[in-house]
Amino acid sequence: MKVTIGHLYPDLFNLYGDSGNVQCLKQRLVWRDMEAEVCPLCAGEEIDFGKLDIVVWGGGADKGQALAVEYLERIGPEFRDYVEDGGVVLAVCGAFQLLGNYYQAGEERIKGLGILDIHTERCDERLVGNVVLESPLVATPVVGFENHAGRTIIGDCTPLGKVLYGRGNTGDGGYEGVVYRNVIGTYLHGPLLPKNPEVCDWLLERALARRYGEGVKLTELSDEAELRANRNMVERLSAGRKGR
Ligand code: GLN
Image 1 (cartoon, rainbow, N blue to C red):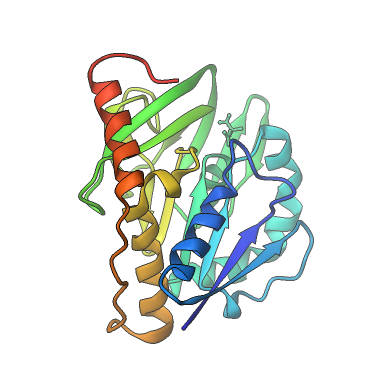
Image 2: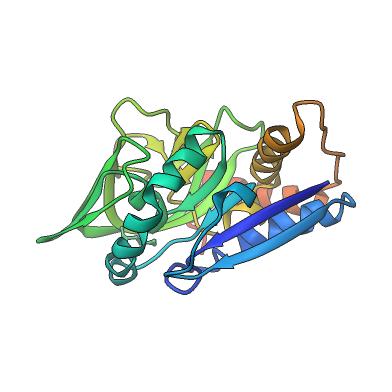
């Protein structure tokens, strides 16, 4: 069994080690004797969404986001069809914002893909620091690191989780990210997936089910070190000591 991972615009979007999410997806397949192919999809390249099982799109600064608009316009219709067909996507921070309708960065309105019915407004205060979420997708708390000036209004969309520590989509709304079909949009860098193996496996399971049917089960991995690191962060933050 093979999973094809498209790494979208690694040349414009790769803040805070977000490409580690691609490595994590790949490694967790390899550990299970499954095949993983990673396709870097640089700005301007033709993209065959039909061959992709997972799209990973990392965070990006305002400048990179503005540069991406012309390329996004070209791939928009096919990207939208991929999502509506159950295609799996992980979009972090700047990418999460661009899955929405727009990102208002001061005077400049950066047009998004409109795949998620959300929008983002930039504010002066950046929201920076560690985050812990409680998410209905997974049993373990989700940990990560946020650094964004944008405030994302998600309307009726389903959040990824409830903020237990940190700021989240709007800084004070109590929720973080969005889940839509097989798409996770989130502000959490880290990179997210090595810190939260259950989230990684949620994405892999969705991708395998879409390609090979619901019967495919992922074998369990020990995840002892990952879960210890996760627990350590949750305990550190809940004890009120600010994590670095
Ligand atoms: N430029 C966006 C913001 O500051 C996204 C930043 C990021 O991807 N970390 O809100």
